[in-house]
Amino acid sequence: MEYNLNSIFSLLIFNRFLFPSSKRNAYETKERFFDNFNFSLDDVYRALGYFNRYSQELQKHLHARVCSLVGRDSEKAYYDVTNYYFEILYEDEDSPDTERKVKRKKGPPKEHRKDPIIQMGLLMDSNGIPMAFHTFSGNESEKTNMLPAVQRVKKDYEIGRIIVVADRELNTSDNTSILSGTNASDEKNNDGYVYGQSIRGADSEFKKWVLESDGYVTTIEKNKAGEDVPFKHKSRLYAKEITKKDSNGTRRLKMKIYQKQMVYYSDKYAKKQKYEREKAVAKAKALIQNPANYTKATSYGCTAYINNISFSKETGEIVNEKELSINEEKIAKEALYDGYYSIVTSEKELSDKEIRDIYKGLWEIEESFKIIKSEFKTRPVFVSTEEHIQAHFLIFYNRQKCY
Image (cartoon, rainbow, N blue to C red; front, side, top):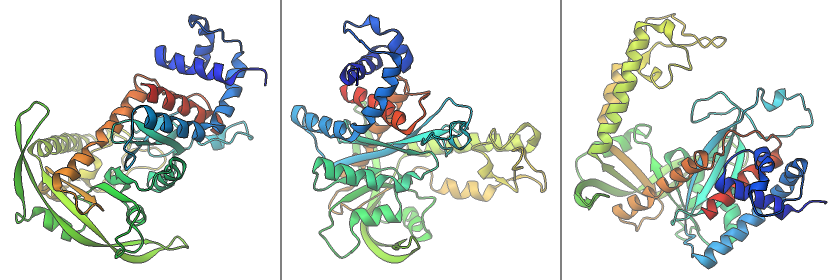
């Protein structure tokens, strides 16, 4: 090797700190730094493959440095997923380069773009400092990629127990049963979880419990402005029956897990949900009046409130086979649960306030994603091979750790 990996890595990190831009731009403007960067642009791209080889080792090293310099509570790991689009004109299967093996696949982009995407999962500690990251294809489910990341971190960082804190999208039977242990009567389960719980998507028994007034208590809490705010909440210990996959991948193994379920009500959250629904319903009414003005893409967010709507697979245009109308029944059912939010946990000894305080830490990871995408300018992504993609995000991970 005729170039210095550390020198190239330093340039990319320094450039990302001060002048976030592409790798080509970092190379072309390298003279602005004091270091003598003696390598070519081709060397920069070649080096990305080597950086990828050391990704997990470097993450492990940074973990050790954080523990040494700052200290780290590794027992709680906040996990979330975001995705990134690519500025290319084809998906990987359509690539003219048949040797190219990459992870860019079309999936469910959270910004509803049609560009090929890659997803990044990020683990963060209770201080808001990243612990580890991993990437996976846009067409893979985030629900199945969390546990491998957690297990890898436990092994590499020699962590005995982790309580995974995640949003409700990751609250699945498989994730919950594995984290809480396969034997529900065994109190020596190794790991734990604190998950958001969808109320509108829950079973009828849970919904009934949420709306029952029995058990609710009101406590006063201070908000960020120091004002007293009422906190209406209740909780219960519950034996929940779930069905998980067997060794053949068939979902037929029934078991019970014992968890604490907590629900709380917020006037502010109720107003927010009502406002968002009314905005979507207004769009739905406009669509019904002029369906020709909308397609599947432009009608996003309002179709759930419209009866009989369907779209052409070829054009995405609305197919007027039946009369369109507002789904008043769905609106009324949703309104019943405005303002209610639920969290479930394996940590049965936690108080309601402790559960909510732990779960509120998820905003830190959302903030990190915003910083990565905006200030650090992670997007758009122009690199293509799997090794280069991994190295691209490794640079941002190191930049964020320093930040």
